[in-house]
Image 1 (cartoon, rainbow, N blue to C red):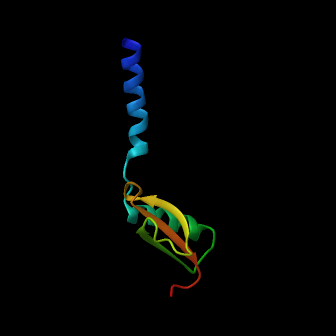
Image 2 (image 1 turned 90 degrees about the horizontal axis):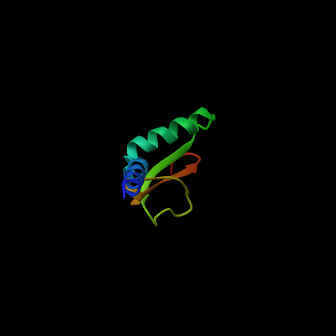
Image 3 (image 1 turned 45 degrees about the vertical axis):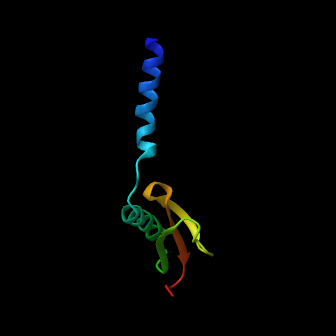
Length: 77
């Protein structure tokens, strides 16, 4: 019984960060820093509802998976 309880508590502690909701603006800033570090100057990043990606590349998820961060290289239209 004690081993089962210990295992359950350990798994709960390990899983907590994975279930955390990441703010879209915070994630966009992190992704933008990585893109700019690679020398890309003209691009757009947007947080859109899941399923509204269009022809843009999904580069992250935020708000608990309700939204995705999409990337498109080139000048904003």
